[in-house]
Length: 143
Image (cartoon, rainbow, N blue to C red; front, top):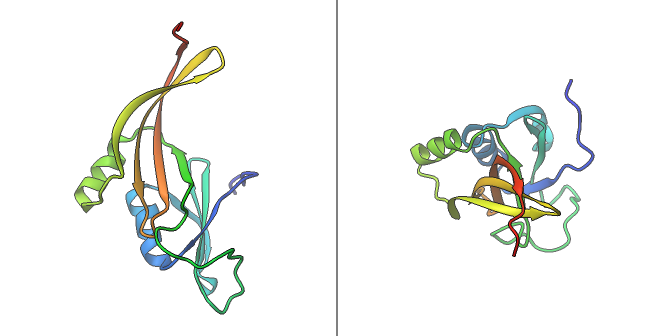
């Protein structure tokens, strides 16, 4: 049994099978469990959790407006992974385009800078996903 996180985003998707192919095959998530009859899957990647629910106009889903691609405007989902290189290789083989290419960045967090190697891509419905490999911490450079 895995430990559920206190915050787990649930994405409404247009085709669960297509989304599972992306999240599982390309990004490396595992299906923790699913309810096929409801078009639902709960995914896990080393403690990063996400839920996918296929859109059904008759199901009374919690929608605040019409679904128009790209879905999830204004949000990006950061997923920490041990290494971005294997994921990039799978995406390259699949011909999956990147939204932003790989870069090493350092973000200030109080008295330190936190480094990460990151890239962004969109899932089949347009949700923006940022994959992050941690590079460690260093003291903040003085301005």
